[in-house]
Length: 181
View 1 (spheres, rainbow, N blue to C red):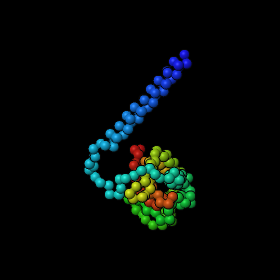
View 2: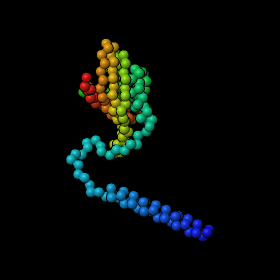
View 3: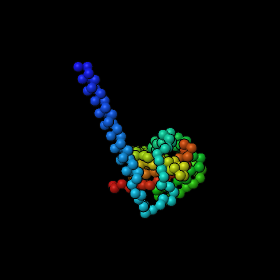
View 4: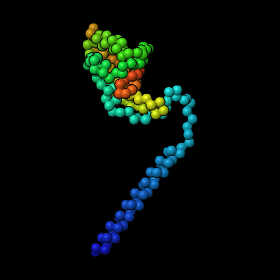
């Protein structure tokens, strides 16, 4: 009886090992098929970079997301703390600024002071590290609802590209989509 149990156990062991080897071989075959596919010729070449991974620190992500929280709460001093000393800003309306953060914050503060409330709903974010250029970006998609002190309410979708250098936002580009009333 003991011999029969030992033979069955041995057979099960070898069968399990055999199936594992087959699954591994099939997985490797699929991976090699994917990497040996013929090259695709793309109609455009990126002028900046097309080599990205997601190797951006979670601390940088936290700083970027905190910038939205600071804007929402109207804490411009805290917002200043996540910005680099010099910043480039490309606004959704065509505004372009490159210089000390103090002058940009002065403009933003005037606008924020015209609002009684801001509500931000983050839809998604991505972390992108440009391998060849060694730049880090955090892109954020969100809906913002602004309530003006006059009582007017405006809502819109935004997508921001936040360029991060040494843990601070040094480059900021914004794209806006109006919502139907």
